[in-house]
Length: 173
Image 1 (cartoon, rainbow, N blue to C red):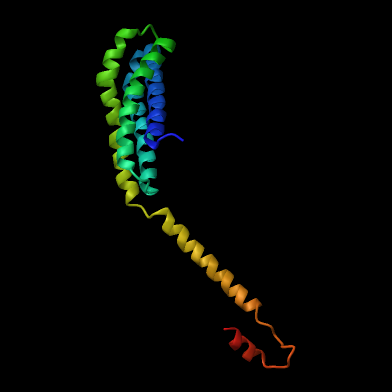
Image 2 (cartoon, rainbow, N blue to C red):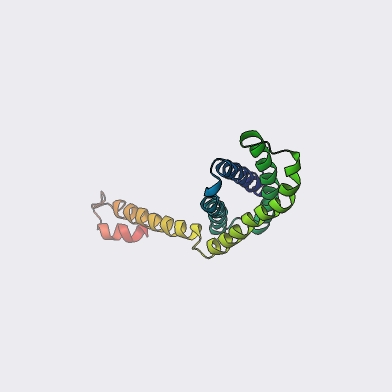
């Protein structure tokens, strides 16, 4: 099983790299549509990190803050690399010269684009009611209802010895 930070980092690297490639393709095909596509892409990418961070906060995962810190570092570097590879393969003739800016400024921006929304999600998710407290209330209620049904059905209505059924019930307690 992979470390949680590695899973989050690799998934977000692929998502961000694919978004960079898609955004590059949109910019190449429709140069004037950049004003709309870029903010929407950034909002979607931030939303993914925010929701995943909130889920980790809600589930009270151990080490969640450091997991997201490492995931942001892996995601930033991986997204820069995958973005350059994706643009070179599918969009235009992006070459090795694009790796430098992608692995420095681009990676730093992507790491912040992962870390800040995930941190906000951790804070919001950590304030939500724990999922274990909800299930423990449900399990106590179901055990109580089963116990009450069992106690009602276990009391015999008549006795084979001719004694009062009430005395048998008192003796069983």
